[in-house]
Image (cartoon, rainbow, N blue to C red):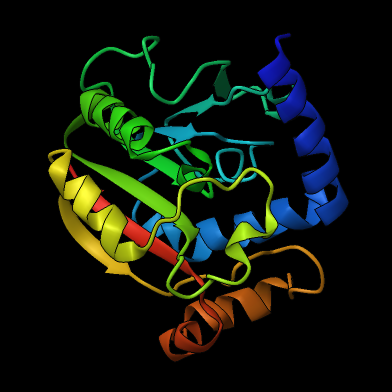
Length: 221
C-alpha cells in the first residue's frame, strides 16, 4: 500500500465509520429505490467512480456492477456481485471502449486536484460509456455550500452545477437534467434517515430549494 492509499484508508475509516455505515447504506437504499432506479435499469451495467465503502453500488439494482476506488480497504466492504477495481478514475483500462450503460459518482469530483484532472476523468467516462449511456454526478454545490465546502481537508476543486455542466458538455456529453439543489450537504450527524422521511423529501422538490446543497447532473454520451 502506497502513501496515498494509506492516507485514504485512514481518512475513510475516520470519516465514514464515524458517520455510521449502517445509516449511510440505509439512506442509499432508499435513494436508489425511490429515485435513482428511474435512471438506472436493472438490465444496465453500472460503474461507480470512487465508490468508497459501496453504499450506492451495493444497493442499486443492475445486471453487472463495478466499483472503482484507490482505497484497497474497499474490497472487503463490497458484496460478491460488485467487481472491485483498485484503480484511479482517470485510468479505467480494465474496461473496453463503450462497455457500460451508466457511470455514477457521488461526492468525488471536488476531491480532484484541478480542472485538468477532472477533464481526464470525464474523457475516461466518455470512453467507457455506450452511446446514449448516462453519466450521473452528485456533489456539493459551491454556490449553495460555500461555507461548508472547505470544512473537509481533501476538498480541492470548487464546482457548481453550472461549471460542471460546462465541463461535461466540453467533454462531449449532452445535459439531460441539471438540478442545482438536490440533496442536503451531508448525511452525517442528525440528518433523518428513516425511509419515509427520505421518500417524502424526494417527492417535494420545493424542499430541495430550502435544504438542498448538492447538485445532480445527468448527462448523455
